[in-house]
Length: 64
Ligand SMILES: [Zn+2]
Image (cartoon, rainbow, N blue to C red; front, side, top):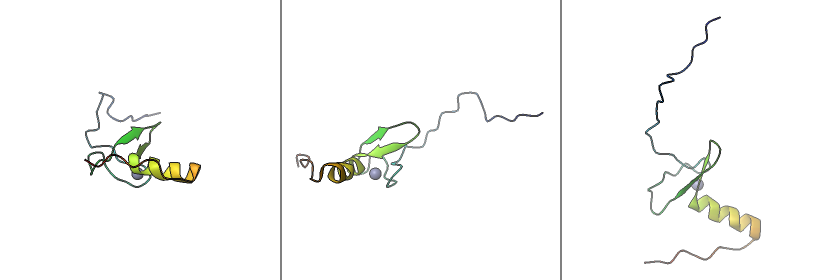
């Protein structure tokens, strides 16, 4: 039985992670990503989730 495994030699993915929900990448205008188990969620989706969960908008980030 031949088992092909992908390059085991610690191949690090260099591409930037992106939000698993909306696809935004970290670095896009103030987007920050939170890594989960194989997924990522961005600050905007977190805000959206907060709205859905709590029914209100979280305080807007200070505009500088
Ligand atoms: Zn997102």
